[in-house]
Image (cartoon, rainbow over all chains, first blue to last red; front, side):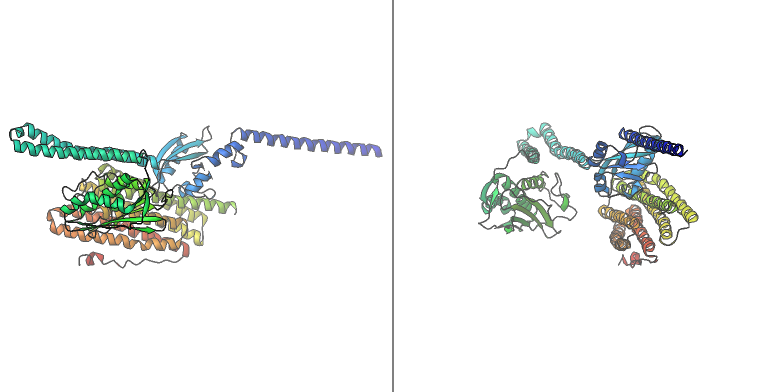
Length: 394
Length: 231
């Protein structure tokens, strides 16, 4: 009897142990199956994602955001956190992407279940192409995945190209129209009067020279911008390069009774490309003389500022309005024509060329002015080769 | 945090999100209104006027959503003040959109790019107004009373620009009586932009109330500017 009871208890214990083990095994396999399903990408949360998917999300070189059906952010990759800040759990998307169009795009995707794209410009001026896909791949959508492509540079480049074509067309049309009129006058009777014919031919020659100068400047700028102009740097006394360029401009200055004063210490020796840096000086001095009224003063000074040498070209002209200052180094930017008298029009490229040549020398250029009190141009160059200005002009 | 509380917090966040969304729509309306004026873009001006309806709808939605939250959740203290502030901010945003639509309607009346040297000042007024708007919404979202104080102080910049335009327009009208009509329209444009600054100040007052519980009013010491401007 005793033995019987003990045997039954033993069998029961064995059965219980087997049942427990079987349940454990079942639980284990269920867990494995779930892991496998998640690894196959059939859903699951971030923690259940396979390692490679996790890596894609974390290392993707552009912002990625995941939102749920309510449009609340449920995940953001490091790029998104860097660009828009770290979202609080379940936060509405608009807290991160401050543009109503982003929310409307997500609403559209969640409603129709189709991917969509929209360009948005955020407050700080960054332009994104915002792509939104519904997830999961099968309908109905439970949320959306957002991918943001920064296209700011592309948008600016397209705008610059469009403006360049428009500006160039405008700049070429003016001399061509003049040439057209002059040639017509010459053909229709002008040839019969030798004096008139000579005057017309002279003016035609001037127009051709102006057009040729524009084309030359355009090509020079394009070469410098694309880095196809290697600088031939030599250690040169700055005072010599300045004196050379001032001499070239002296006839024009004397014609307007403008005094040009040079205060460049003889001991400043810099790594310079004589021709290219000379071009910078010519462009700055040419503007200074052009805009300074008769009897005025143009000053060229230089001094050491730590590891830099600062060259200053100052004039006593009408100055540059503050709203124009940020734009004067742009291609074809000209001060409004009311401020510039006839004959003072250049190609509109001189300062753009100067800027790019100074940058090629590892320096920086900027201007300061208050209307009625002249303009001052600053060029800062590294005293030793190899160092460059990393920051923007002050 | 229990589920009821969590649910309420989510609903409150959604309400704040809707206010930010409304602010973004208003910001765009102001940007497009001033652009249409500068470029004489009548299609863009018409678009601003048309979009005003969507802005009105969202404002009413926020009011309904806010009222429902108060009625069903019976929030207290700061939560209650946040909901009231959200509704009040939405009302002011909607009025700002009306000012933007006002600028757009005046652009349509002016029919083509207005010949005025003061466009940079109009642009500046709009830019300062938009910056103030966006910063005031930052203050609202982050419950930042200090920022709200700073933003409200910038209304003086807008008022200063308004004074410049006001005086120049009156002078222009005296010198060119035949252009009185277009100059008057431009004066209204400036007035609409000036009101944008005032509305942002209202929002800032409400943000301060939301954070501190203290109702205060930024006193406009330039309330007599229309008269002094002519001196």
